[in-house]
Image 1 (cartoon, one colour):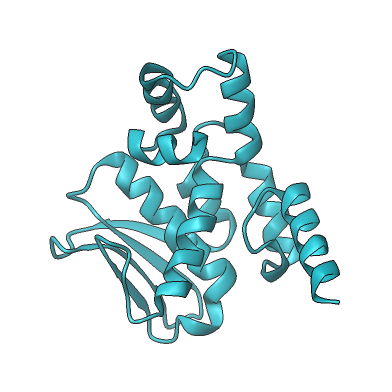
Image 2 (cartoon, rainbow, N blue to C red):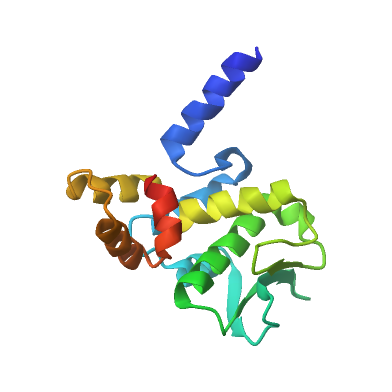
Length: 177
């Protein structure tokens, strides 16, 4: 039985191209999908469509961002103004991921260090990182971009893709393999 469940889970991931799809509500998934065709993905607009407020804030040097509830029941994402634009985009996606798949664990808030560590478990942070990567670098869009380059994964192609997707060269190198 476990083997067939793994096959079904793999099939869901292939169809959706998002980590942890089964934990994202259908409504939130539709919103997520509606933003995945524009490259670079407009993470601020995505957050807004999900009902999240995004603020660029002065945070301590070791803090990349955070998500916390507001008194009205909505959530706010704060991103460190001193980090690169690519890092800020990934941080917003990371906090969106917490909202989508860990909403029940946010409680009074989740503060993520520059290493994306928080009071949450390493596994929870890894899940948020995986989904954040799927948000800013949709698998199908990256695969299509690589195909347009004839499958070339040279350093220059990786840099060009990173620029196009608004992510770091290191993040894109990991995505293209």
